[in-house]
Amino acid sequence: MNTQLNTALNQQPSLPKQVKIVEVGPRDGLQNEKETISAEVKIELVDRLTKAGFVNIEAASFVSPKWVPQMATSTEVMAGIQRKAGVIYSALTPNMKGFEAALAAGADEVVIFSSASEAFAQKNINCSIAESIERFRDVAAAAKQHRIRLRGSISCAFGCPYQGEVTPEQVADVVKLMRDLGCDEIDIADTIGVGTPRHVQAVMQRVAQEFPIAQISGHFHDTYGQALANIYASMEVGVSIFHSSVAGLGGCPYAKGATGNVATEDVLFMMQGLGVDTCIDLNQVVDAGQFISQHLGRKAVSRAGNAIAAKRIA
Ligand SMILES: CC(C)(COP(=O)([O-])OP(=O)([O-])OC[C@H]1O[C@@H](n2cnc3c(N)ncnc32)[C@H](O)[C@@H]1OP(=O)([O-])[O-])[C@@H](O)C(=O)NCCC(=O)NCCSC(=O)C[C@@](C)(O)CC(=O)[O-]
Image (cartoon, rainbow, N blue to C red):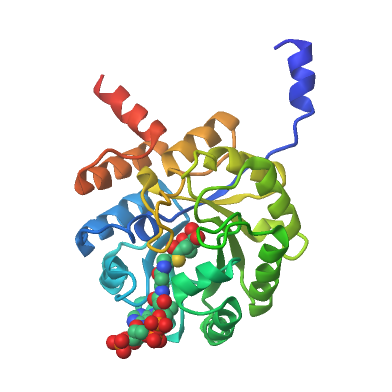
């Protein structure tokens, strides 16, 4: 390597040596599918992901089946998966009814979810941000009582399909509320994928003033093709937890036109190239991505996944 390039590389901000990848495909990825997917298929997907080495898999969502019918099989899914010791299987819980179901199903982590945008909170959970926090108070207390991990997710942290602009200050305000509820981890979510790297860094740096950066995660949808760049930019400012979805599955029922999360295969390929450890077997994730894509009858939305799969056949 020439001296100039070497000096340039040495001046780069350092990246974390290891990151945690939370696989959200079985929940965020599948929740928007119109055709009902059987519990058996969902269970096989989760089991494949467990074998691939994820330490955290979002497997279920105990929300109203009238609002998100695809997640109505969550109890069966949680009962059918082969759990591996040490793996956290998470479930969304919008209220105490959801919490009770998650508790009965043996969720290791419950996820309360609100938004940095008032308009999106109304569309997604039918209440204001303040009302959602009040509703989560009991869920948070019950989670603590049962020693279940509590994660908070903040949608529309970089823009809202109904309200438009969202400021870093608005995101920080919700982070403070979730921190005060006792969240162990807080997700900064780009629901509609409009964030770009410098904007993402500004938001991450602002919220890190309110909550430890080691417990903040980046949840990026890839609607505008910015997700990998945003993950890289987040790592530059110290974020080391990222959400991704096998085969790039997904979309939010309450954010029309939003595509899936960044594909897990693409994230893993980038991390390998950067020498950032994930402890996850990319080949097994590619297999899981091909499995679920075949089941859904379409090609995976993962460039790395499809390229690796094609190379195997060639
Ligand atoms: C919050 C509510 C329930 C309010 O919905 P509501 O209609 O205001 O609530 P309600 O209390 O009046 O209940 C209505 C009906 O739902 C039932 N119900 C009530 N709660 C539950 C429950 N937990 N489990 C099962 N059933 C439930 C309840 O029993 C009742 O049934 P009925 O008496 O009419 O037969 C509703 O708005 C809801 O379920 N919303 C969930 C929407 C959702 O899941 N969105 C997708 C997930 S968020 C997301 O994807 C974003 C994220 C996290 O990935 C980050 C990002 O990318 O942005």
